[in-house]
Image 1 (cartoon, rainbow, N blue to C red):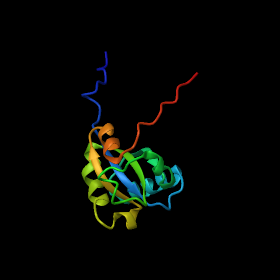
Image 2: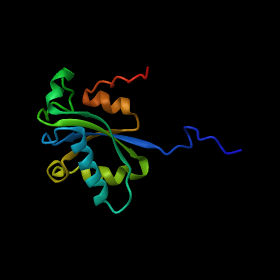
Image 3: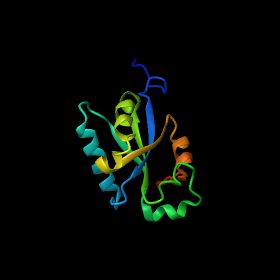
Length: 131
């Protein structure tokens, strides 16, 4: 019998909270930037866009957090990446010119998506239930 894939055996992930260039008007444009970033790296990197809050929807988030007060004119996103690729991606996105070069710049990283959302002041998205 095959060994069951438990939480301990799954590949570990990191969640990265990023600023997104406000010129990105929809989710597809952000995903294109992520794909371009992943293809520019030497290794195969698996990036997934989990949350995206465009600039016009940020006003509905309420009070900004200490991380987002200095950046009121950018969109926010949460990206999932595997732990083995996290250091490489963070090296690209933590530079001060990353927003101009890639359209993305890292603000925070965690092993829990809940913590990244809290730091960025993002609510947990509603789950779509099937009827």
